[in-house]
Amino acid sequence: MAVAYQSNQAKLREQLVWMGILAQRSSTLADEVKANVRRRIDMFQQLWDEDPWIQKLKAEGKAEGKAEGKAEGALQRARWDVLRVIQKRFPGMLTQAQEQVERITDSAVLDELFDQVFDAPDEKVVLSALNKAAQP
Image (tube, rainbow, N blue to C red; front, side, top):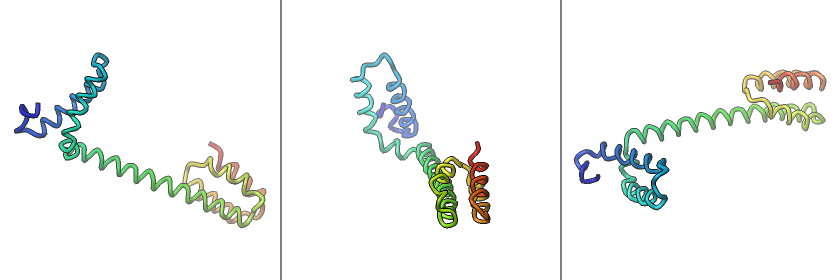
């Protein structure tokens, strides 16, 4: 195949990708044959890595991962902020509050809860705010 497509590297990459996918999904090929195909295709790993489509997929995956990590970090920080205020103002409620705050998955809800806890005059108001915010 490499000889047949030596003048067209893009076409060779494409054919190798499809051959690998089809071989791995085949239920009629023996595992030994699949392993042999995989070994031969692996020799062309550089072609795979340099392919613009593969590079684009990798970049998109990386960007998605960063965005998800950033969102999760912001969510954890918002949870921590709420719990820190509760720890300082109403330490007796901390354990109960931790369970409820962990159930909240919306940063906006946590931001609102933070304000309510910060301004709360007593534990009863905090408990009410926690219960409301933790409801699905």
